[in-house]
Length: 441
Image: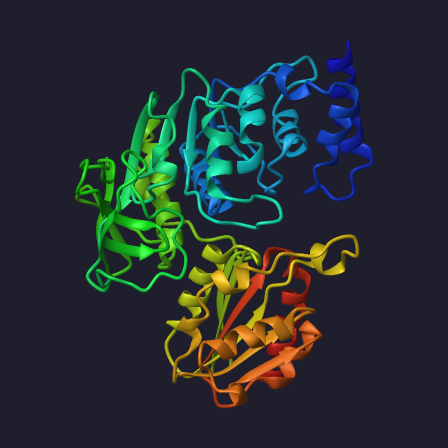
């Protein structure tokens, strides 16, 4: 009875009272009546879960596009609400009042720290872990902690789709059925890189030092232990080349949706999952797909190329990749950075750990073709100090309290503006973009 009341109340609430259809309040209503609602609600025949530190939402968006284009009815938490209320909402919208599933497949993004509890409730058939890396220390702590939360909660029968280049997430579920994806060292990638932060430096088997044959970033790359022979897992889906806007995977070409390395991994993860589900014609579906504009967007404004890159503001891996991407854009550049987490910035009940600022690779912004770096937000002084440590001339750094003011400090003669912003800075980012359009046009 509690479950039925939760189902009925949530559907009525969504129909008549839910103003923000992208929120997860519908799921909260259902869980108010039945705390085990997520256990009780019927699931589609196939349930796919995607978790990991970075790339969950983008990978899920790719998968939703693939399955939808292939003719499947999909239950999908498209708004990125990846806790119990969000998953409940995605399933309620695709389940009848009398608990009959109306979808063929559920594609659900799982919060990595809550994955153990969510897996017990949903019991996914396939779990894709995009990667595991250092994240917000205030919430996630060390990668070993997150790894243990996921690994201890894996269902008895499940297929894992894992990143062979990530020596942490690739160790999940050693006693389970596992399939791996990988990106081979590409022509423009050097074998050795200076890595500010690596979460794994010794062999997980024998605790000897690992040899780094190729480091793509942080702890992602090709490794080997000379003592016991431990190395990367064998990949079933491998990017062997990227050329002319296409990536080659197992001798087949697929349109590259985005050329940033993190999105190449996301697309490859989606390809691996869909292929394991025996979806056909995936290459044709990729031809018409693109990154959600709120996460990546580029447009020409007058003679300026504006490139927007959303990131996790307290996540040094995500930040480093975003910085590297905009730093490598063509032409003389200004870089805008607004990465304060608005919730933490407004909080008065805690002091944030800011070690992530020094774990992030700001050094890639110290380039001659970057004429100005503009940082804004309550921690602007902290970011300025970090930029000064990279050796960037202080005259090239602008630090502001008000995010929207960045528009007034852009150089007139730049060819490109790279704009990196936190996921919770979307409103400010939208305002800044509009002001740039007004000023440049």
